[in-house]
Image (cartoon, rainbow, N blue to C red; front, top):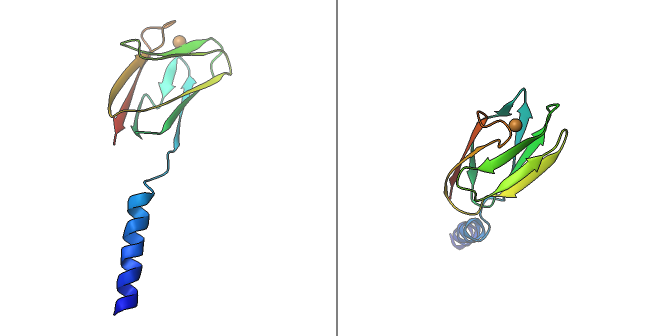
Length: 104
Ligand SMILES: [Cu+2]
């Protein structure tokens, strides 16, 4: 009886000590649009944009919290640090819209 119990406790401690590893979420920019335009991320995840278009783009947060410039074939990333909804757009083509929902 004692050994399985100890194993369960060890497993619980392990899960509590090591939260889900941060991951990288890829967003492609293609034909003047973010793809996917809406993603869900966890705090600590990395959002990486790749510009597959033939013109420069940006990912600019609507309240100015961040801006990354994406030259043709360029890549850039941010790490999301708090829960909430991030609305961003391309400052060169303001009709390009993206959204990141960040959960804990
Ligand atoms: Cu653009």
